[in-house]
Amino acid sequence: MSILIKNIKQLIQVHENNITIVKGEAMKTLPVIENAYLYIQDDTIVEFGTMDFCEGIDAETEIDASGKIVLPSWCDSHTHIVYAGNRVPEFVDRINGLSYAEIANRGGGILNSALQLQDTSEDELYEQSMRRLNEIITMGTGAVEIKTGYGLTVEAELKMLKVIRRIKQDTLAKIAPTLLAAHAIPTEFKDNKQDYIDKIINELIPKASALRIAKYIDVFCEDGYFSVEDTEAILKAGKKHKLIPKIHVNQFNILGGVKLGVDYKALSVDHLEELDKKDIEALKCSNTMPVALPACSYFLGIPYTPARKIIDAGLPLAIATDYNPGSTPSGNMNFVVSTACIKLKMTPEEAINAATVNGAYAMGFSNMYGSITRGKKANIIITKPMDSYAQIPYEFAHDPIDTVIINGQVLVK
Image 1 (cartoon, helix red, strand yellow):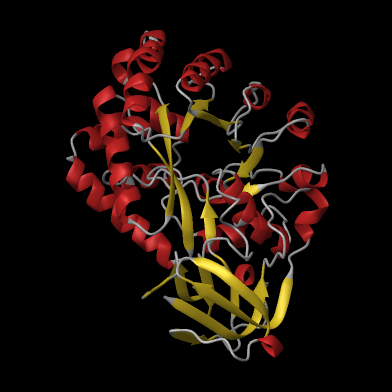
Image 2 (tube, helix red, strand yellow; image 1 turned 180 degrees about the vertical axis):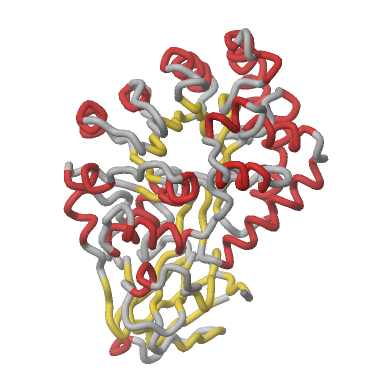
């Protein structure tokens, strides 16, 4: 199967040589070819350039992109889309004045989702999750990380991993599976958290490893959840089973989890709504990707990740949805890109870099995803007609997408 996209108004995120990460000042640069073409063979980007050099290229499918922008598909490096039901009543509770912590203390929050998931069959959980995934693909997401964490028992966490495996087999999108059993403390362990940690370390991680599904290990390092010491013990156990560390960190409090993530060579540290100079200095000495989740801040009404401090310190930054039923019931990366510009004060170039190549890096995929480069996978967004790529974040409630190509296949919206 070959595809020729021609008369492209702007072909963006174009790199002659492969790029796997963009940092600091370089994030303000987004390479563009005006009046361009893009040639795809099977699932691979083969050639691109200006229309002056397009003559003579034959393809089975031709797409006229006159007036349209073409860019790599979004790479969403932080989601929890395998969950059951919803938490609409808690949304109303927050409107009526209850905080995230107060809802959790009443048995809501993650514990509520865990109860729903434990009572949902694997097949039904798969069907619900695939509907969400298919929806975000139509919104331009071509690579996505999926975490467990709403099981909170050995059996339910393994059920989530099996669902993620089925999704990975059945979707064209690239999937990164993450074990996040340390997402909350189950009610039966509230007076003895260490017993739950021991169960994660001694039972769940070995069983998950034996299934050969999870690639990453994650922990919610936060007051009332898992301390820095707890997090270290779980990351250490995960690494013994060749699971790569990631951490939910600094969402509400600064505990020292960023430095721990750096020390354990975490691929990413995610949330970072709270951040201090020590955290930034630790990140400067690492290959760890900071990840901001602006839609979570929007939904909960909490501070936004200080993106300007991170980027202006010469660091990279990725942005992701945090798609989950409690704090971000949306997987719309277009909205995330807009919110990064409007609330995090990122330029459109920075936001698109953060949502493509740096998002791919935060999943370990940027050697093959996240930019328009010869030899990379053909995961492509074609927008509706627009003046420039800056219109994508500008029209924050608008659906900018006309066509999505995943693994070289044109999908019908």
